[in-house]
Image: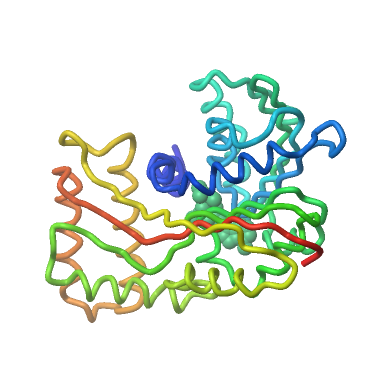
Length: 299
Ligand SMILES: C[S@@+](CC[C@H](N)C(=O)[O-])C[C@H]1O[C@@H](n2cnc3c(N)ncnc32)[C@H](O)[C@@H]1O
């Protein structure tokens, strides 16, 4: 049976596809393409909080990684997630005409050959012992890890290496149609994020501030990547109804943890939101930011 969180990460893919700021993607593609593979050697990518590997698939689908050899290190703190990466890549490869082979895990398409290493570890601890990477990626990550670890993460980059932190939660969880408890639910849900170690319902603003001021790295571009999930022609696209149910379950767990049994409106709010998903009537929007930048020297 598919792990519920891993199914959520799969379902999130089409939501992220719509949301990611294409200007930043295009800039990143151009910069990676400017490398001279013959003299610079294989491109080295470190992805922290890689989940089941959807960003790697997207980089291939969108032609972000340059031609030639790539060494891609995918780190996640949950061993179950890194263990799911080969299966996800094989399934995606079969659907999209990309060759995926094992031992070592390798993605081959056209003139690209990407060798993938999966590592179950804390990303900041891993980065502390790493250096020389050309690209550091952390998607939907900086709102859940302690941002004091940012300089350590960036220290894994070679001088001139790029960082890309898309889908950083920026402080809005909105639903339509309106419900009288919307504001109270949102406040308690964000309160739960703020109480978690490393969590921050305004992480996007904090990351912007920190990257803007960081010594040894420049912030090249910032873009919005708001999630908007809505039915199209009477149904949610792909597996996005599951995505919404998972979001509602997450909100339920978080709000109950904060309020115990002291928040009478929650049951009615959840029941109507779940009915609206079943009837393909619920609209959901969040605010997020993408960040792209570059190490100018050792961070
Ligand atoms: C919201 S998910 C995003 C996964 C993936 N980047 C994506 O967008 O599909 C966050 C991921 O970060 C991982 N994670 C959380 N804290 C981490 C840490 N300190 N080091 C490495 N991975 C971490 C989680 O296990 C989870 O897979």
